Length: 58
Image (cartoon, rainbow, N blue to C red; front, side, top):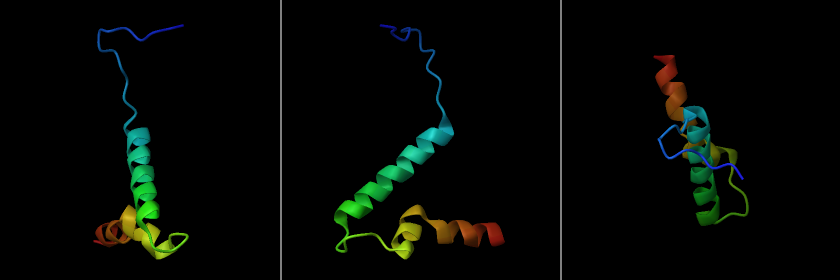
């Protein structure tokens, strides 16, 4: 078994961490939703897609 050294050499993949956070947000939204599946609009709202489109248009 290989154990990471204690010296703090951990590498962070910021893209992967952001994707994990977004997946978590989707899981929370899905677990609290009244409907069986999230609509595309609900998914866009959770992922803040409309906000990204508005900001990139400026």
